[in-house]
Image (cartoon, rainbow, N blue to C red; front, top):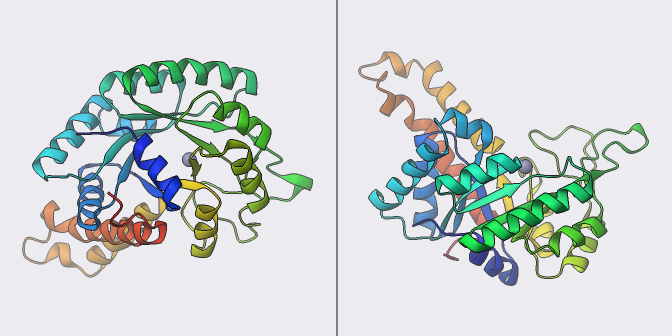
Length: 287
Ligand SMILES: [Zn+2]
């Protein structure tokens, strides 16, 4: 059964480790992540962007697929199904469809509007026992015309959103979605320390986990990050393994064209990536 992310993240915050959110795109992705979490006895959050939700034929299809797998694969570790970067309307749709967790990303709104909309969703999620992630907008993304700094949040605004009763809070600390540029300035640990100081026990979320060096990830966890989002890295691993299979001509040998064979190397590559991340984040055996 799907669970809210609240308990697993509060445990992670107290235990100084992080739970990975791995975004899903299809059946192979979902199966690879769930089986790895079970094998490693780790809690896990399955992330679904609005675009991926559409691609998978809607949120109800996603809920049906994930719930079916939990039962048929005997998954017993805590699993949350979470909307990633949701709009206000998207969050409501996912709640209706049976997601156990949603993110409302109001970071592009002025802070007053972000607060008002987040507040409404806090009430809905609390009533239903669902977890809610909020995001605080960026300041000084390209300071002095220098690119590569990523987005940095205002710690005071983080405190305002945190006080609304959200479950977890995403705040920019110099992280970037997708691949990091050569001249990336790195994570702003001063900002993270200040946010953690003001928000106390609130689990903090690090987006854009692909390509952040391991020692920066570990330092971020030590400063209060309890949820780390991984998306691009699984996509790159899947694509590389699939390319290798096709370039080796294996799809032309025997029944190598069978999708169960063709997609197997990519599936294994996702499993290996998820395992590596769970080990790095410290969530192994924390189910
Ligand atoms: Zn994100």
